[in-house]
Length: 173
Image 1 (cartoon, helix red, strand yellow):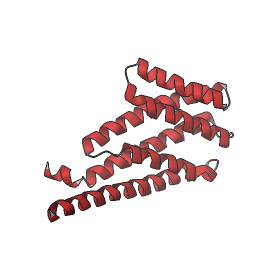
Image 2 (cartoon, rainbow, N blue to C red; image 1 turned 135 degrees about the vertical axis):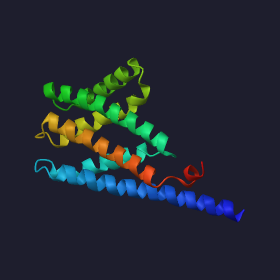
Image 3 (cartoon, rainbow, N blue to C red; image 1 turned 180 degrees about the horizontal axis):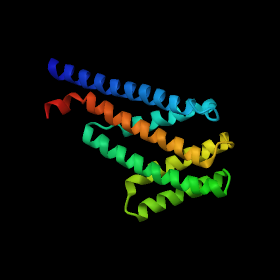
């Protein structure tokens, strides 16, 4: 009984460590990326937060599942970034436009038989369009590029951390 309890505590501690490391590394890498550009440095904490959200949502119980979730996140994020780039080249931020574009992103992913890309695509659209609202002087290309890089940063760090520090159960299997 005591061993089962210790295993549970050990697994819980390792999972908590995963969250801490992913959040810390994703935040600082994205903060550095966004902060190095003068026009976006004021908004670096928000971009870093986006990378943290992505990294934490990508982390799964094992490495294979984490890689699969990262793939969905990155490819869905790419769909959202491309749609947002096209939209912002023709229209400014508008809340109605944002939610309609989110719907278009989901419709596109579902129509292409890629339902797992829907949520990341819609969220990426929301984040990019929100950024264009709070930082209108940022070009659509720079905005979409930075937000997509933050998706990659969060996803890659989650994959790396789960690979380097596997859950205790993964080591036994």
